[in-house]
Length: 194
Ligand code: 5GP
Image (cartoon, rainbow, N blue to C red; front, top):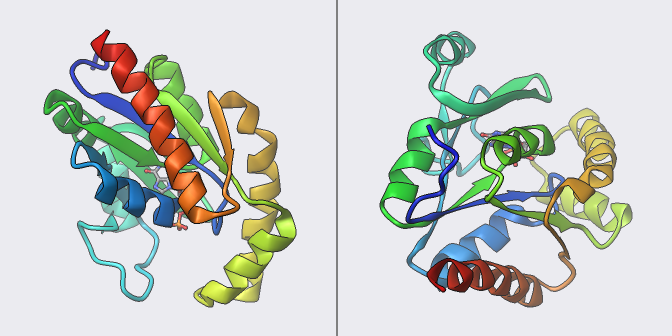
């Protein structure tokens, strides 16, 4: 895979668990048909309502390790005792089709992608505060107390790495956040055309 972004555009969106990345992503995908989401592969168990092939490709640890051996991942990490990874094919297919593909990934994976694709647009979504993040995680009600604690610890570490990103957007009001990210993407697409 070359470093060329080609016809499409590669976007990395990160932010601590519970900061609203998925909601922002859904709004962006609805707002523009060129925008699509990269479906990651994970060994984590599906949460209620999550669909294989839509939210993630859910596979076993053995299968994930086989795919690492095969060189199928553009990046992968072990996070919270599970593997998560982006398939090279997801990026290539979307970029070759001229689409704006958004990778919603954690900071280590984002750093790997930014190193391979320096032209990638990177956005870090920041919660208004750790307190607000904790409230959102609890409201979601899908995780145990232990997992929530662990996710908050990871969140603090991730927020310290936000300086690696080209843009940091505070997710205070959903509508405003989506508009800001949309404007950022529009800026780069118009730059590509000029
Ligand atoms: P969750 O378990 O909440 O769905 O995801 C946990 C974290 O893993 C989130 O920060 C999410 O953005 C990140 N993540 C999801 N898919 C990938 C991936 O393919 N690669 C990397 N590096 N992180 C991912």
